[in-house]
Image (cartoon, rainbow, N blue to C red; front, top):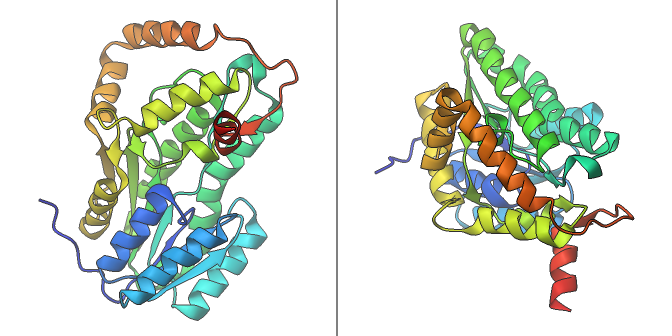
Length: 298
């Protein structure tokens, strides 16, 4: 049983908080007593609905729009949160994108977008809240990375590269900031039922790419619910844990990668052959999951 921590009086900011694991963490933080700022970039309706639910339940919450991959947006976001709720005590770096395609369909822009959103935003947001945390000599920074940063899954290479770097950044920050009373928690989730596949970007044999990505992220046998994951993350915040690995699949994957790297690589080589056997879109047109789902329904 996970005991809900008490974070009364704390101010939390969750980036990418309008849906999926970000929204679940925002709810869990509110239930633990924290005031919550829900950051979003393009889902104003979802962020507003989440904040309305939190307010209705008697929680202090606001929605704040910002592209956290841009320094100027981050600065304005922190100013707004501080003005409305107070200095940020708990930062959850969760914003991210997934670009799903084989190496033949990758572009420089694919790498730039993924690294900027999934990695640079973590640095920018962390840098923006450090002064206030150091002044209080108390702070929590939670970085949502991925098992993809440990296991380089085929057709998710930019994502895997960004998440591997995010693990390194998070662990390094943890070593540097502990002396200031700031605890950094590196969260390494395995597969979670986040509902992210409609928002991912696909290219090549896009319907096939969507099919495998959707199955892995929705199958109950392979993916943890975001509500359960969020409760464990918030409990780790209160305890001040340095690292949290979620799901049995992530724990097994890390162990297998360390002890049997050759076997893991051969398994991924086989998976890549299956993924690469379909027809590619020679126009290299990128489509989001929701567009593909709409086309299939039509």
